[in-house]
Amino acid sequence: MNWIIRSSERNDYPQLMDIENHIWHLGNTPHVTTYETVADYQKHYSVGSQLVALAEDSQEIAGFLGFHSPTSLTAHQKGWLIDVGVHPSFQGKGVGTALLTAIKTLAANEGIHKLSLRVLSTNPAAIQLYQKNGFQLEGRLKDEFWIEGQFIDDLLMAYFLN
Image (cartoon, rainbow, N blue to C red; front, side):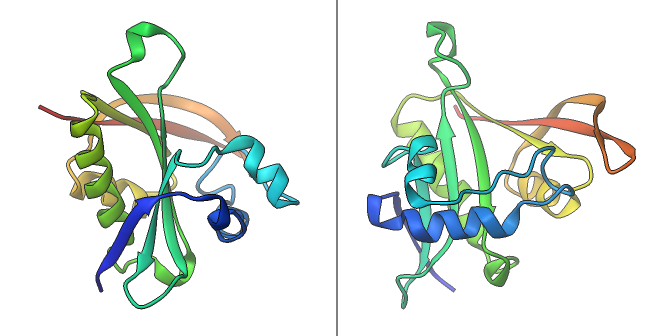
């Protein structure tokens, strides 16, 4: 399937909020956040701060990729921290790869040197997606989180642009 990737728009918020509210669980995030209203969601994500993937033949958002500077430090101006979310009905259909390909192009055009992300060690599907798309393990925060009675490692992964 072919995906249309574009910057997020205000009218995407209801669908983005719905995806966020459906995909996160303690197997893939240390803290499940849910949004009650679109206004609530809008407080956390500005227009254009995410890429969205839509099926060619639909206006339904299949997934998103958020990106921002890791901190407000000038020294962090050449890196973006990213997060990816794909609606369950579209997982395994190339949405994540399409979004990662698009952010690499955007980052290169913006002079970004490094894309970083964090992923729980209990999320093998996401780890495999990132590795398949050229992300490498930079570090492991051993026993970083105590979730549902067990310690979970937090993996730090990165992709370096030329």
